[in-house]
Length: 313
Ligand code: AKB
Image (cartoon, rainbow, N blue to C red; front, side, top):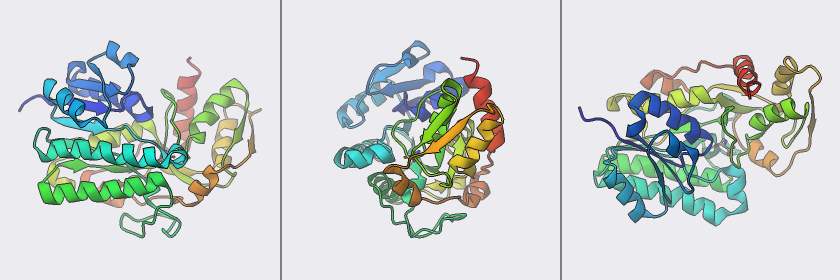
């Protein structure tokens, strides 16, 4: 079998930073091309391209030159940022996807990964243990773009036999990189502020429970679904994915076990409304049944690991 050549687009973001490292470990550094709109340090460890995913010609040129057969498309505007620049949010999130899906339609690449989000759900969705198939009436630009993207992924799969795979990420928490403009970002900032200042002012209210996941689980799921046999990936829109759920108050309690003097205050802003429209917990049984999804981390294990790594710096 030919060696896979992988292109990661949006490689310096929160997911890309860790995904590129893992993919380079699994596939070999030379076989994973990192790419972003600006140069990054990832060029030191393997191939890197400055790439604007909106530019279909440039994308096609990079893919052909490196003989890429798999693309992970991570470039996107997240929920809070897309509310500020709706047109850009819609254009980047949709045009980037079309440019990549069209390469697969033309059989220039043979597999695509594209992330969806819990933002596809909306205020009329059942909020507890949200099922895979349910009411989806997203009320944010980001959520609308993710829901439309899911429909397009399924369409390209059914109509053009495109092998596209996708996960609905919950809020992601990692120590290696900062999140960029999401509603769940507080769950990363809180650790940095706890260590730096011993206190944190949260932009969500204390009992706002949201589905979350520790980054090693998100990377495991992402590579897992991409490596699964094609016939096991039965859902070609996007799979529900679950780690664990917590509120700002819950995570503050867990942080206090490491920093007893830590204090949290609450000053909800416009992101509260977004959070209130999202599920509190997710049912990921389809992902477990179809390709064996199982998370390794819960709130305690994640918090211990975050402190272990952040305190090393
Ligand atoms: C966001 O908060 O926008 C993202 C997401 C849940 O997709 N982290």
